[in-house]
Length: 187
Image 1 (cartoon, rainbow, N blue to C red):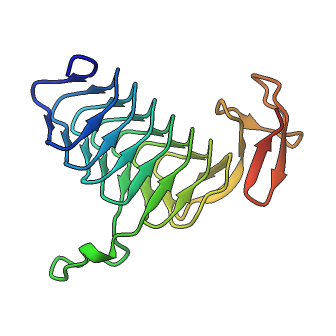
Image 2 (cartoon, helix red, strand yellow):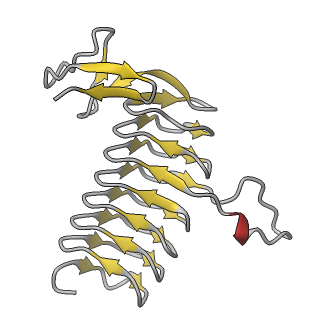
């Protein structure tokens, strides 16, 4: 464990792959079969797995659980206490572990504090989900979405700036254009 850090109160099960530079803080539990990329930060009381994939450079804030079927690509930010579900119609007395639906959070996306991500959705690259939003359907690349249920309310740039109708990032000057999948930046 010399190339990543695990706090003494955290548990990392056998069969977990953790990348260099990653920090796993107080009271976390990472279950077998999970993979955490390089330079990630898992805040206090985070639960990962089993069999969860987390890309490089992700930040998972305090009190977040990522269940089987959740994939975070590179550079994803999960705000404090955001929630990922794993079945659509849970009942305590009905076993539904064979009904877990995959959830994909694409590169650079941000999920705000206390947001709920219903299983089976895809959150697009560089999308931004507002605090407290309830995501019940796919979110396009660069979409700014909030509310219950989450609705598209605008566009954000790669660096998280809200875009006006000209689709030019006020911070970087990058120019975007709309496609069927959301926005793209023409490099």
